[in-house]
Length: 250
Image (tube, rainbow, N blue to C red):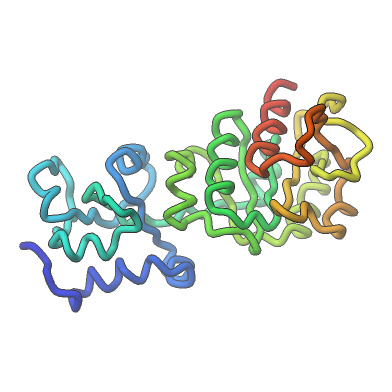
């Protein structure tokens, strides 16, 4: 059966998942596109597949599939040219205390506003083998369509703990003797001079303003990246990627 009415319960529920508040309440999110859906690991719970009428003929081995008219599917899609397939997925719950106790090499993001930057940082954290990404409450939503697309599937590969209070996470890390570094123009040490410990965490701040002074005060070391060119600063995702590359080397 092809659903054509906007009054359909599944359609209305999926439409509400475009809202961050409802995603938080339901602990569910939508992911769109053939490539991203192929990247969903088996240990993630996919509640339902949603496909368009046009996509119907190409669907293979999908259980719990709902078919929408192309018109309705386009209303659910966040893209101009929908591929015709999306999935409704349960969010993963991660225990911050256990992760901090048992692993090292983390990135902490404070007030990263751009979803593209956030997704790109998550992707780089995955590429450089970090063990988790901690994202502050003030940051962009990790489950928004723009962020998910920018992660290129990395959202499924390592723990992303969102809606954190920076101070609480840093205090937990200090108890576990984790070395806490922060990117800051006030830093007296350059990144290439840092010898990263096995258990280290690096804080990246807001694209325009950097990290808050209160957060700087909680860090063990303030670090800056040596840039011999004329640009005054680096994009947040680029800076984070450079830092995580160095963390992975050391």
